Length: 338
Image 1: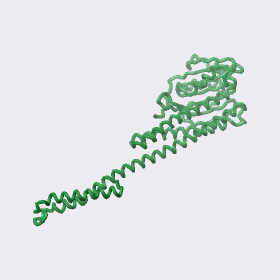
Image 2 (image 1 turned 90 degrees about the vertical axis):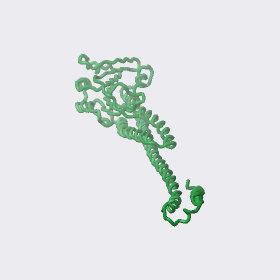
Image 3 (image 1 turned 135 degrees about the vertical axis):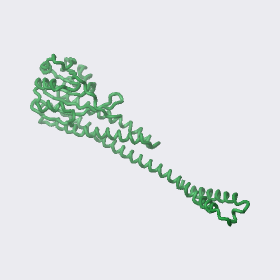
Image 4 (image 1 turned 180 degrees about the vertical axis):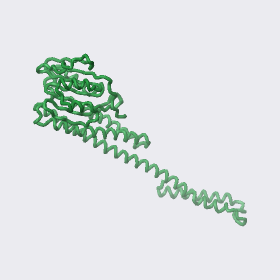
């Protein structure tokens, strides 16, 4: 259950989805030198265009896109940086938004850095690899009559952020099942493997907490009335995303506390087992102390030891040792020492 950063594609893949309440079209193209990037900025009146770029976007391609949409040079430079924290920056004609996607691809947990440019009638998303959490949004756009087809680019931006947050919640749901299973295993049997799993889940939760806290600030700033690109009709939806983020943060903190409790239970179980072992060894040692004394006395090999000459001395010595051992075992059990 490692958290992996996806391998970047050697070339960029542009997916274009354009729609309004009545019409919809979708196509995909590679960013070759022959491609006319000016077509990306030619958006008919009343339409919304979502431009999704998968793969490591080259500086040359990014500069051409920036020229078409008049993106600030500082933003262009930052898009190439995959180590930014989640944030939002407001410019005259667009918003620049950075987020982290966390989702399962099969059994592999993927962490992907993603950046958005929100304009008046377009959204540009820059991902690291093919694959994301936006398939449900694509399906809604393809179906006429859905709510997303009736709203503008700001609602599309809300939908994308909401899908990212839902991805966090889906991961937390999977971790919840793993934690429940792990709790039962720790109670039943301690092992280094259990401790390794606890530490691995704690690391994932730490990353989720690290990436989702700044995202709350992003949605908070997006919901401000001063933002010209966010319509008043979209603001309640953004507040809903904010609440989902708060829920994810609370869930993350709860799971971390549970795992801390599991680690304490693991240590407690280990100490208990060690105490049980030490108790058994101590009892055995205690039983053998008088037996060792008796054997030591008659093993001194002095010439004048009356019992050595006695015919039944050996048998009597054994009888005494067995009686002492039996009495001690009985006494320990009566005291409930084992």
